[in-house]
Length: 401
Image (cartoon, rainbow, N blue to C red; front, side, top):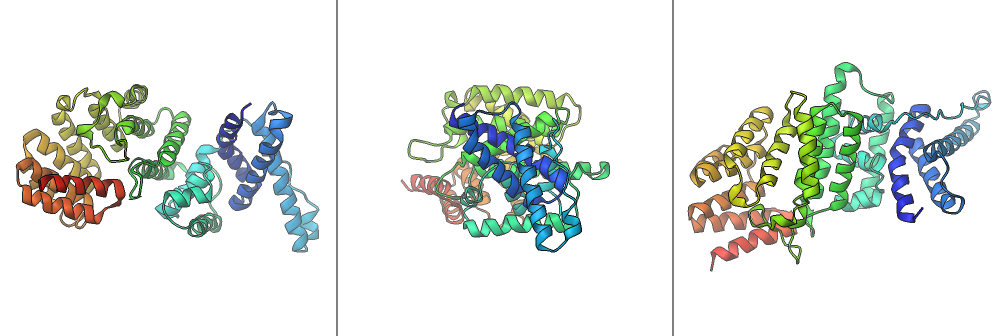
């Protein structure tokens, strides 16, 4: 087995092993340390000795032994002779996949969204603390503290390792999907920094969404989220020019779009819609599919996209959806209609660079060069993404010629 394949295998098994060890011993932080040592031992021994017949069982046993040793050490240090004599039974090894339970635990409502994202990427995604810190442009020590506090909060909450009660299921699944959605968005369009994309984040979000979809194949919204990611990520190869510059959707070379991802995303979406219950991720995936189906920008079915954004707006009340609906309205009936819709966003999105950027685009469509120039400059000054800043500044410079 090559080193790359071994790394992939260990990364795939890590959340399953961690889930099994947490289920047996109940201590998130100690279990994570034990699993990391088991993974390290595997990385050292398997290349020379060969991969065992059941690598998952091997890792669970190794981590279980490490947890047992740690428990005995702690008991001895605390002078609990009687408890120390009762060594925990060996960790149960079954074919059960605890990844979904681990995801639910990491996305517990008691955690803030940033903490849930960080813990999910660490425990389920297998990213190192340094990788997560780099992705979100914070010092490694800061991210380590955030992850540590999240694990401590879970421990102090007394939340058992397992699936939520039926009454809490929908809310907890929604939290899981929301975290994966945010991770994907940050990877597809970084909010700050030199690069437009962070493929390690968007790729990890897709991997985890695939995992959830495999475990819950009949859930329409899980299918909708995975389809949305696939259909959106299919356009990534055409979004960046040779110099790293942003290329907007209307100017992309559509022959560069990943047709394999489009086909897969369309199939997943179709399967999800067959459930008969349509949710917000499915609607977003339907919009993404309409864009992907258009061989030329002129072929885009903007009328249907406008109708879907109207439905999505009623479902979510999200001002960002209204912002996108304004763009669709401008494409269907003209820029005046889009600008009128933007008037209601002055409060919720006041000062947001995307509101200024859309206003600039619509004013440019309407032929109001001075207004467009002012809003492009305002948007460029507000964004913390270097590629988006350069794109907006370039648009403004073109209007001055």
